[in-house]
Length: 145
Image: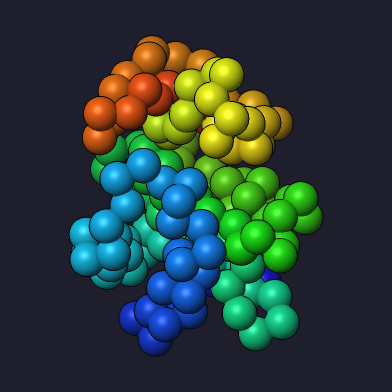
């Protein structure tokens, strides 16, 4: 079930982040929690639950039209959770809007699953960037629904 994240989910979010934090260049718990609280207050954070815990978490900025965070618990990967979260997020935008996400560049072993997921959801490669001194790639999705 996909639902909005609440402050009561903090413990579960931090538990999941312990498992996936190495997948996020520049991850810092304090800053991450600030971003979570900001997303919660703006209704820009959703999650899918399985077995009473967080299976996947997505945050975005409606104003910036940017998917800012997406993670799936390792035990629930390859179950279309990320795809369902992205599909739910696209409902917040109008036809013709361009949504961006920053991820790893092609050829980076850390980015293989993320890039495959984004491509399968319709994102296409855009400009190359450097974020937290790490080579990254911007990808974009044009809303067509």
